[in-house]
Every structure is written in C-alpha cells, then in structure tokens.
Image 1 (cartoon, one colour):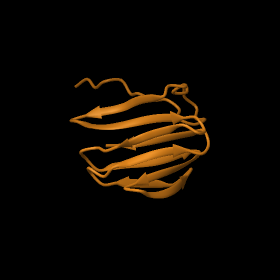
Image 2 (tube, one colour; image 1 turned 90 degrees about the vertical axis):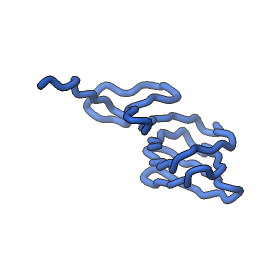
Image 3 (cartoon, helix red, strand yellow; image 1 turned 60 degrees about the vertical axis):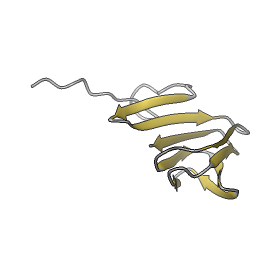
Image 4 (tube, helix red, strand yellow; image 1 turned 45 degrees about the horizontal axis):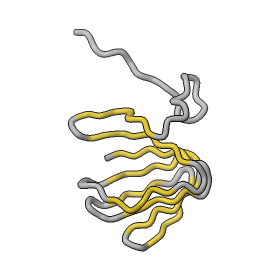
Length: 103
C-alpha cells in the first residue's frame, strides 16, 4: 500500500521550512473539516461573522480580543477559545499574532 508523502512545516520556529507570511493557509481539509493557519498584524480586525459549525481557535503567538455577541474575551499565546456554531463573533489583534483554527 502506498501513502501520500508526509507534509511538515514550521508554524513558529521549528526545524522545518516556515509556513511563511501568508495571511491564511489551509493545513488540512478533510471531509469538510479544516485546520487553518492565520497570521494577523497588530491592529488588524476580522469583522463580525459566524460559522455553521463550532470553531476552535488556538493562539500560537500574540494577543487578541475575540468578541462573541458583544462580550469581549482576551486571549494570548497558549490560550484557546471555542466559538459555538452560528454565534456572531469578531477578532481584534493587539499584537502581531499567529493562530490555528479548527472548524
């Protein structure tokens, strides 16, 4: 049996080639579920939006404010947030940031 080649890269400062300065990179798209890597500059905003599924956000680097239905929550490197399906939410970056999104 033959398998696809192993994919590897660095999202921070690992041994593999860095993912680069892309704003968004889909790391995995399997059966409609995605793992996304996103970068933001300090002061950047993602306007209010919603997703049809629960969204898991893991902060790798930086500080952000995630606002869900008018309630702001500060998250920083090492934190995570779970946004319920359909909940209106927005994001404001306080520092340059790198995040993983699982949806």
